[in-house]
Image 1 (cartoon, helix red, strand yellow):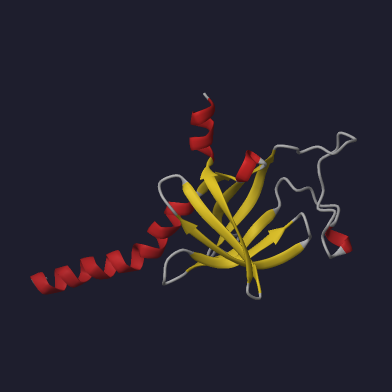
Image 2 (tube, rainbow, N blue to C red):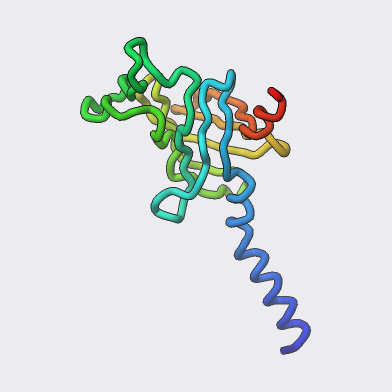
Length: 151
């Protein structure tokens, strides 16, 4: 194999693996503001996109001691779903400009919005949800970093 061909092979491999490396940067568990929830980012069942699933809630039980449900969902048939285990980020695809684009479901109002997720620093993720031109942004922290700070 010629040196030029070897260099091209290495460059092609690096470029092809870039989306996987970018995904690794956001994989894991993230604490939402006020540590009200922990959301795990991992591959979606389709294997082509990323999803974020609620894994823990600060206030996981309702006043009757039952798991909190998706009571605000606009689809009545989905209102009996427990919030823990619910995918709130879905269809996240790598954005050529950096970050990820997809959808975010807000269980507080039962609506789904356009989402942008960007890594900012070693333990920080910026999550933004938008409808038309109005956006709301949250900063999520790596759950392990939050746990370490509490020790």
